[in-house]
Amino acid sequence: MNIGLGVISTILCFLAVVLIDRIFKKEGLIVWVSIATIIANIVVCKTVNVLGLVSSLGNIMFASNFLATDIISEKYGKEVGRKAVLLGFVSTIIFVISTQIALVFVPDETDIVNDSMKTLFSFNLRTSVASVTMYLASNMLDIWLFDKIKQKIPEKLWLRNNVATIISNCSENFFFAFLAFAGIMDIPTILSIAFTGSIIEIIIALCDTPFLYLSKYNKRATT
Image (cartoon, rainbow, N blue to C red; front, side, top):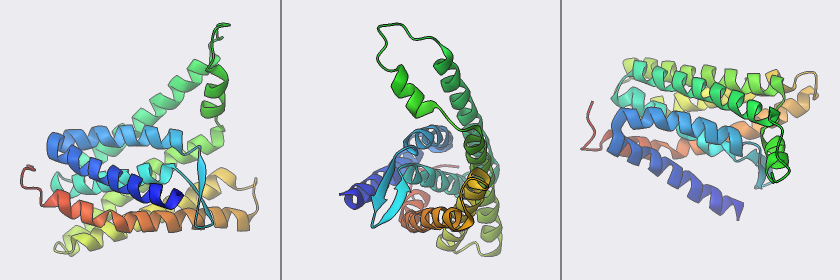
């Protein structure tokens, strides 16, 4: 069941990115990056089993950001891509601060959600810092690599998309795992977490290529 839901969710998510680009152009994609980042930071709390591998539900939404920034870089320029990533970074900071302040408020006796909010939004500072830091670094790396490969091999869209996204995704997984869990978990466990996440995200990254082409050759798109 999880495999089928994962496939459907990935297709719908990537189609949504393409549709947002078609309707709202670069402004819509910039907004998407912020929304997807916040959603990913919520659903990442849930883990699921896919073919014996433990994965978080945040992988698909995080992957959609790489698709969105690749579309932006390809059609609207790397500077717009960087702006989208920075806005997503700021949005995440605001989201984290806002939820933490909300938890400080003393609930009324009629409240029925405070305990659930504590479970969902209570966080480990080290993990949160690692997550936000690697979000910014990996997405900026993706934009930089995409642009560099485009300059060298402009005719190979599929190449720059996959190379930039896979390198950025895998780097994020391994650096995040060590930043968040070094000293808490042993090295083999940390490597296992990073490796599993990388495999799943590589598969998702390969799947976004057709959607990038679909967006690029959208006749209504304008620069």
